[in-house]
Each structure stands twice: as C-alpha cells, then as structure tokens.
Length: 266
Image (cartoon, rainbow, N blue to C red; front, side, top):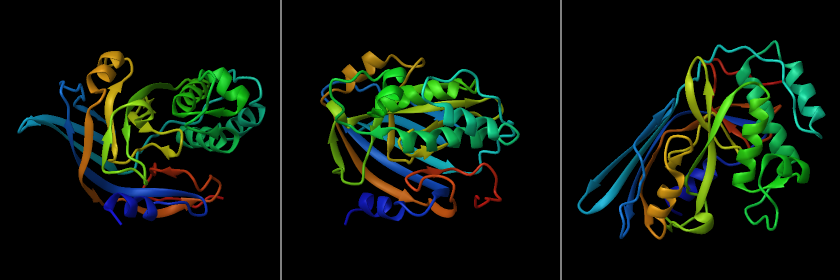
C-alpha cells in the first residue's frame, strides 16, 4: 500500500467530524512541454513554494494545523436562497457563538443536503441551480458555499488546482476532471484560510496543489499552461493527527480546531 493510501485510511470516516492538528509536507515534480503557471502562495496554515530545478518544476507544499484562533462572533444570517429555511434557523441559533462554528454548520448542512458527484451531466453549476437540484460537482459545491457564506457577510473565493485522492496514482496528467476546485475564506481577524466544501473545514491537506486562486491569478492562462502536464507526488511527510471530534457534525467532514481546548459537541 502506498503512502497516499495509508494517509487517507488513517484520516477516514469515523463518528463525528474529526478535528485534525499537526502538519504535513509534500513534494511534487511537474513535467511539461510548457512552463506551468503554478504560483508561490501562502495563507493561514498553507504554504506553496515553487522553483525550477534540473529542468523540472518542483512544488513544495506545507500545511500546519495550529488552532485558527479566530475571535469573530456569530452573525445574523442575511437573505438565503429558497429551500434553506432549516439552515437559516441553525445559523440564527448560533448567533451568540463563534463565527467559525456557523461556517462549520454551513459545510455540515451542505454535506447532508447536497449530493456530491463528479459526473453531474447537463446541469448548470451556479449556486442557485446546485441548491435547487441538491446536487453538484466540486465547482457547484464551491459556488454554493461562496453564496451561503456571503449570507454571513464572509468573503470567499474559488481556488483551482490538483487534489490527490486516495485511489489516485502518484502521477496524474493535468486534464479534465483531474483538476479540482476548493475555496479560500477570509476572516477579518486571522486572514484567509482554505476550505474544501466536499469535506475540509479551515484546512486542506498537503496533497492539494494550487494552480490559480481566482481574483489573484489568471485562471484561463494557468489552466492552458498546465494542460497535458504530468504532476508526480514524490514524497509525503504526514504529521496530522485526529485529536478529537465533533459528534454534531457529519463524519465525512474534517476540521482544523479554532482553540487548543477542543470541545466534543454536543
């Protein structure tokens, strides 16, 4: 069994959302006829460094799941799309709590009310359609998440890149459904942090490689530059560990703690 499969088995489903602390480091090599536009990038908990070496592009990713330590309090939800009255009620019930918990409620609601499917055919992936049809791929999930987060007056933007899955080869050709989309949420007090609406709250693993952060990089140029390139996961050092859980959240979710003292809820 390769290292990547072992990682995902260790971090698999369990009762309640797993709370993950520690860190990971991954090293990738990108081989291409062109010069792929993978950027240097850093936010709260994630660093990607890129360099050309021996004729290849090398990408080093480091993830550090220290507590987020956001002090932002909950907010009264603004207008939400039709069919989300139950979500609006849950958000308003937590208005006296932490904003990070309201964000977790949104991700949990999405995981339980929207079917995630890579092969959604002939369906638009805008937020309204995904919420109405209750299905979407990674693009649709991100569009829906950005829309729902905006009801809390939180800014979020999409990210396009590569996210190695448990059954992937360590070598992937960058085309079609190999590309993945997740989001970056901005907290006024701690800055920007990655989330993946399909299952990661306030972090992504080091197996995620950024190709373009929307509104920062030219997405079309980045995708064209990378098309047909091969990316290989050369090494993965895993120090992430599950220290607690949130029994009120879906076990398909994993999250970064906001404080060192991690409550088990309820």
